[in-house]
Length: 420
Ligand SMILES: Cc1cc2nc3c(=O)[nH]c(=O)nc-3n(C[C@H](O)[C@H](O)[C@H](O)COP(=O)(O)OP(=O)(O)OC[C@H]3O[C@@H](n4cnc5c(N)ncnc54)[C@H](O)[C@@H]3O)c2cc1C
Image: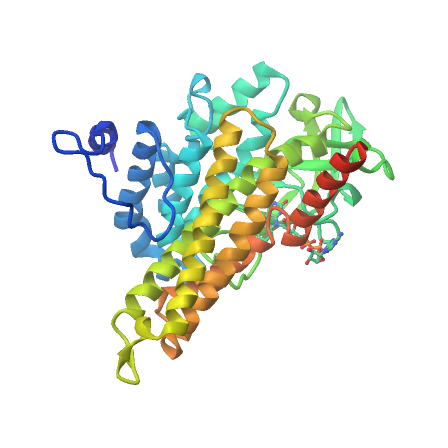
C-alpha cells in the first residue's frame, strides 16, 4: 500500500472513530449483542486496527496457506509491514516511529493473527527485537539505533534462549570476555525468531562465569560480522511462515555496542518480555477469535440427527463457555496493554494475560477443530493450521509454567514482604 492509500485508510477510519453512537439519530439504547467482548479503541487505535484489517484482507490472508505449506519467510510481507508503518508503530514518534499505544499494537496483532498467524509472529518478532533499545539508558545511542531501524528498515532479533537455558536464562553459557577495547562473544543462541533474516541481534551474554544474573550484559551484534553464523533454520510444526534460527557466535563487538552493562542485561530482557507477552496474548486471542467464528459458522449450517449442530444443547453450551472465556482473555489482554500505556509496571499482569490468553486460545481452537469433525483435521481448513500455529503461544516468551512461576513469586513477595 502506498502513502496516499494509507492516508485514505487513515482518514476514513479517523472519520469513523469520531462518530458517536447515535450521531444524527435517536440514541441506540438496545443492549449489546456482541457474543465476545470488544475493546474500546480511540481514534488513533482504530486507525491502526483498520490499516491492519485492510492489509490482512488484501496481502496477508492470500499468502497464509502457501507460506505455511512451503515454510517460506515472506520478504514481501516484511516490506509491507515496513511501508505501512506497522513495523515501527510502537517506536517513539520523536525517533521517527509511529508513537502508537500498546493497545493499538494489540489490536493490530490480533487483527493480523485472525487471518495469518505467521504474519502476526513476524510483527511480534520485530517488536521484541526493538524492545531492548527502548530500555537503554544511553539516549544518544538509543536515538542513533532506532533511526537506523526506522529509516533503513533494519530488523533486530532478540537472542536470549540457549539450548540448555530457555526458562532459566540466568544459567546461560554464552560468554563475553574483554578483548581489544571491546568484547569477544562466544556461544550459541537457539530458536531465535527472525534469525537468518535480521540485520542485528540483541545478544545477552554472561561476562563472568558463574555470576548468574549479576554478570549478564546485552550487546548489539551485527548479523554480518565475522564469526556470526545464523544459517541453521528450524523446521517447525506451526508458525511456518516465520523464521527461527540457531545463532553461532565467535565474534568481536565494540564497547559502544553494549546495550546493558553486566548485571543489567537480564533486567533489560525481562522488561522487553513484559511488553512482548502482552503482544503474544493478543496474538493468541486473534487466533482464537478466528477459530471461534469459523466453528460457529459451521455449526449454524451443518446438520446431524435432523438438527443444526448449533441446536444440539451440548454444543451450544460449549460455544457459550468458549465465548465467555475468550471475552475474559481479551479483556485482560487489553487491560494489561492499557495499564502499560498508563505507565504502570505490568510484569504480573502481562504474565497473567499471556497465561490466560494462550491457554484459552488452545481450548477454543481445540474445540473448534472438534466441531468441524473430520473436516477440521484436514487441509485446507484454516482451523487445522490454527491448531498448529497456536501451540507456541504457550511456549515462547516464557512457557505457561514460567508465567505461573512469576505470578506465584509475586503473590509470595506480597504476602511475606520479601522481594520476588
Ligand atoms: C518458534 C519459537 C520461537 C522462539 N523465539 C525466540 C526468540 O526470538 N528469542 C529467544 O531468545 N527465544 C526464543 N524462543 C525460545 C523460547 O523462549 C523457549 O523455548 C522457552 O522460553 C522455553 O525454554 P526451553 O525450550 O529451553 O524449555 P525448558 O526451559 O527446558 O523447559 C522445559 C519444560 O519444563 C518446564 N519448566 C521449566 N522450569 C520449570 C519450573 N521451574 N517449574 C515448572 N516447570 C518448569 C517448562 O515450562 C517446559 O514445559 C522461541 C521458541 C520457539 C519454539
